[in-house]
Amino acid sequence: MRKYFITGLLILVPLAITAWVLSLVISTMDQSLLFVPERWQPRTLIGFDIPGLGTILTVLIVFLTGLLTNNLVGNYIVRLWEKLLHRIPVVSSLYGSVKQVSDTLFSSSGNAFRKAVLIPYPHQDCRTIAFLTGVPGGDVKNHLEGEYVSVYVPTTPNPTSGFFLMLAKKDVIELDMSVDAALKYIVSMGVVAPE
Image 1 (cartoon, rainbow, N blue to C red):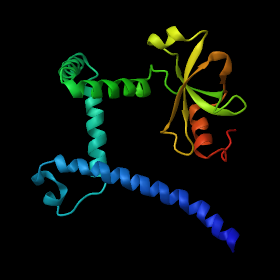
Image 2 (spheres, helix red, strand yellow):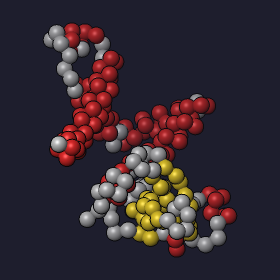
Image 3 (cartoon, rainbow, N blue to C red):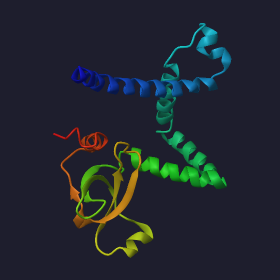
Image 4 (spheres, helix red, strand yellow):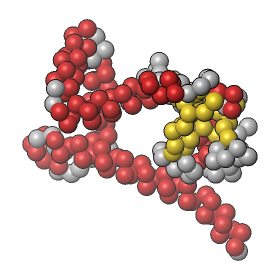
């Protein structure tokens, strides 16, 4: 009986968590309908709410923004907008930091998390999977002797938090493993081994 109960848990828990996360994301995106005038909301027009309409609206707005800013005029407007934001004291530093991180992570030409590596961490006799993020820059590289690389070490089971380390390149082993496979391995705490 215990075996069947555990088997049932192994099937239902991932489904329940997935459904809960999707429900949370969709309900959060549905909140974007609050910015639509009352007379244009589904509750006013047809008498009831349509679940997921906010998600569709959010995806559509993101897509149209990308479409409009991907030409000469849209690009010019974005540059003007960014110049304006860079003149506002607190907003400038916050927006600049977020923009730099998002450009690094989401840009197709960026190098963030493009390679899974094996590194000695937390001490020389242990190994963990990390992601190559680049090379140290600025004044930092002036204080490092030899060739160094920058890596991000995600925590288990939540890879969104972690540690940023600079290691000697000779201590870093590049893995023949995709970033997705490495993330699954980390999130599963080593239970789901890569093929």
